[in-house]
Picture 1 (cartoon, rainbow, N blue to C red):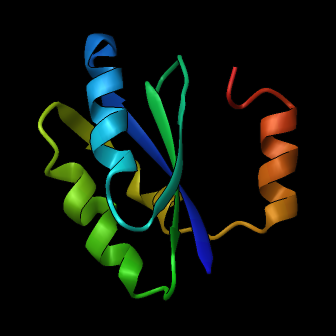
Picture 2: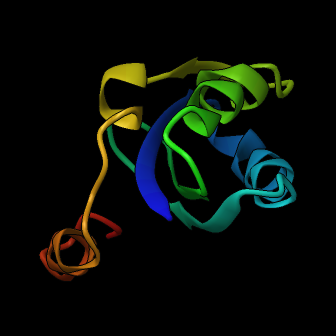
Length: 93
């Protein structure tokens, strides 16, 4: 499995709706809500690296209310250790 982090810019009032839409995509394991430059962080897991292009920015960018995705970060892969360390230092706060 390949894990990527997608940073999504949207209006704050749309976060619950967009998070639900992203969570319903087959390859998405978790969605975290955040504040700051990006309003939403989605953790996406796919079986093959090629599948990332279908999900990011493919299907996610087509969700109504999504203004932008950070595809530079989205295509980077993270180990479980990297993810645990990132969220432990407050990425999700």
